[in-house]
Image 1 (cartoon, rainbow, N blue to C red):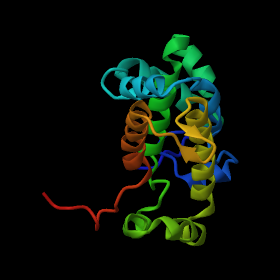
Image 2 (image 1 turned 90 degrees about the vertical axis):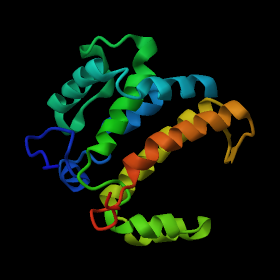
Image 3 (image 1 turned 180 degrees about the vertical axis):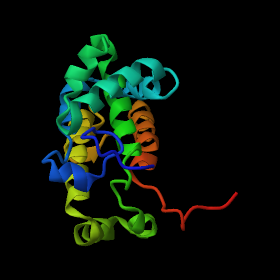
Image 4 (image 1 turned 135 degrees about the vertical axis):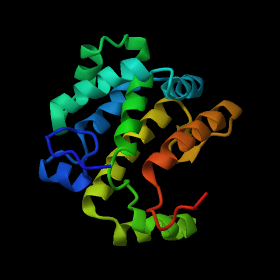
Length: 195
């Protein structure tokens, strides 16, 4: 995918966003406020609703509004301009964030770290990322972790630093991981399997 050079938001590298003083993009920080869910069941439902093609046409309007605003785009403004009902804001917010992450020319966990991230143990991942992750990527992951952490605390899925044990919480966490993982980490072409 070619990188956008028109000042937009989508398909722009994190380095380019950082040069525009927009890394992490402000919409990441907005996520915590717009995803105002209070239960694991609501989060799971929003993640289910955020999956294409259920939101495809209205999501195009939200993303077009974000892209026209550029690097400092406001998710709330884009949702309003696309006439998204307030009760659908969490699903559209998640879908827009996932699209932004998927369209990064280089994923948040850089392609050259793909194998190392997959092979890293629990205790070795953080030191690996501190050592090898470019600052713009680290800033995005930090902001995304904060926003998602706030949502997980508000929904009761995480209480402090510990996940709570509940089938509905586990379902919501799995849905979140399955949505985020391919958007945050992908191999470069040399790691991809040939069909």
